[in-house]
Structure formats: C-alpha cells, structure tokens
Length: 402
Image (spheres, rainbow, N blue to C red):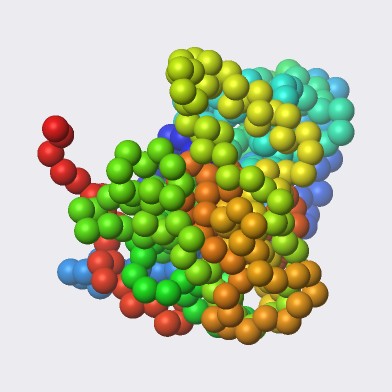
C-alpha cells in the first residue's frame, strides 16, 4: 500500500480516577444530536508489548484509525476539544488532548480527496465510509454544520500501562453557546492468535514491519493491512538488488519459494497479474511529471475494478481455523501452484516471490486477517513461532554516497 504520512500524536501521562461511561451518557449525548463513530467499531488491537532493555519497563502502542464526530442537529456545533483517555481497572492512566492544529493536520490532506476519484482508496484503507452516515458531508473544520462529520485519521498512542479501554470525548458549544459533549468507548484488546504460523520463506530474510517498527512502518496506517510484514532478500553488500535494480529479476528475492505458514484451505487466488516494472517506475524517456500523471490515472482506473487484485497482484489467501486467513501478496507472474478449495499443509510450496500488484520492489507481503476479502477484512496481530531474530531493533542499511 502507498505510504500515508501523518503527524504522530504525543501522549501525556496522567493518573486519577474516572467514572465509568454508561448507556445513560450515550443516550444523553445522542439526544443532543452529536455522536462519535469509530472504524473499526468494536475494539482496537494493541501491539504486542516490548521492553526497555535497561529498565525492562514494558511499552504498548495502538493506532486509533478513524474517528468521526457526527452532527445530526439542525444547527451548527463548534468543537472545542477532543480528549482521549486510557482506562485501566476504572482508573485514568493516561490522557491526550488533541489540539486544534493536530485535528486539522491529520484530517485536511485526506479530506481534500474525499469527494474525488480517490475516495475508494480512502474507504479501503481507513473505512471512512463506515463512519460517515448517508447524506452527511465530511469536514476537517471544527465548526460542524448540520449533517456534517468531523473526521480524524490515524491517531497513534503509546502506553506504559496496558489499558482496558479508550474513552473518547468531543466537547464544544452549540449556536446558543450551550455546552455540548458526546462520549464513546472503545475496548482495547491484545489479540491472541488461534493459529500457530511458521515463516513463509526458506533461509534468512530482512523483515520490515511488526513488531518493533511501530508507527515507522507504513502498514500501520491502514485497517486491512495494519499488522502486515514485508520480506526482502538482502545481498552481500546490503542491497536488495544486483545491477541497477530496474528489472524484477535483479532482486535477490525474486523467484524464491513462498510457503504456507500453517495448514488450511485455499480461500482465494489470483494468478493473472502481469509483471510490469514501469507501473511504479518511469518508462524510458518519461519525465517524472508524466510518470506521476500516468500512475495516478492507472490507479484511479484500477480502483473502479477489482481492488483486491490491484493491491495484491498475484496472491494466495488461505483459510485457517477460527476464522483466520493468511495472505501472500505480490507473487511472481504465473507462479501460483494451488487452487481454490485445495487443502494445503504448513511449509507447502504455494507460489514464488515477485513484484505484481501494489508493489514498488520485489518482496513478499504477508498478513493475517479476519476475512478473505481484503477490502472489508481487518488485519490481525500475529507472530511466527519458529522465527529467530538476529537484530531486535529496527535499522537501516547505510553506506557513503559516491
């Protein structure tokens, strides 16, 4: 997926007690015509904890993807404050107040495209359509007109205490200068995998993504692929490719076997995507501007069709027990070796590493979801039971400029 760059929101610690949010509060807020909606709506998954190597103090992080403050009244409402409180055993353990600049900065850039052709992409990545009632206009303005909704995207939070829930409050005034407030609660969950996964590749690979990269990993910004990881094969000089890297075959990982991470049944495949290097790179004689114009036109056209095929290229999706699905994206042209409905075993060769679909370079994208439908499924945290980590902290390959 394309990297969506947002300003990270810094958390401020606080300690105290807070009353439990009740259905009475919800009814009161709802009667005033102001409502909070979330995507995903049921709970937010917290990333597996990691520790400070010196103090062993644990840390946790999560992404609050999409929040909508909906104005169903007949009059305008001005929002003064949006507050996020982390609750543990009915105690307030952390509080963050979004400033006006923070609210506008994380919303404005994307909302400028909400009415355009890229709305399909925003709905895919951030489920914006799920928090925007029919007939309501999205806005990044703190003054909400009737039948409008203030949308806030990708609020990243870190904690040293694992919370039970997040209490989100939107406070403001109506046209009569009366105070108005609405409150919503999201459960915080540490998802426990029901399926044990093994690495989907042979040998040593450079893995980008969870768990240590946190918000530095571009996958975190999308609901369908939040906990996905990318595998790249690295050469002896620290590069991902030989020669000039202008052909997929230049990459060290190209054509390597992709293996099923666990037993299951093939739920979906695509084996029709064609390897096209110029999809994400300028063609011979093409200027940078011409390339960008061509790329966005192709993307807009693709989003009108099969989004899953455009994103994943050639792929295999395997259904496991308890409603978990593993996905293997960007496979090599004509390399898929399984069929829908086929039973597969852990370690079975199901395809080869390639560069089809929404992919800038040769790699395997792997993730676990709660559905075989990438456009509507939610990414789930997972771990590999057989993975040996050589370097625990994320880093970069560096070398002097020539």
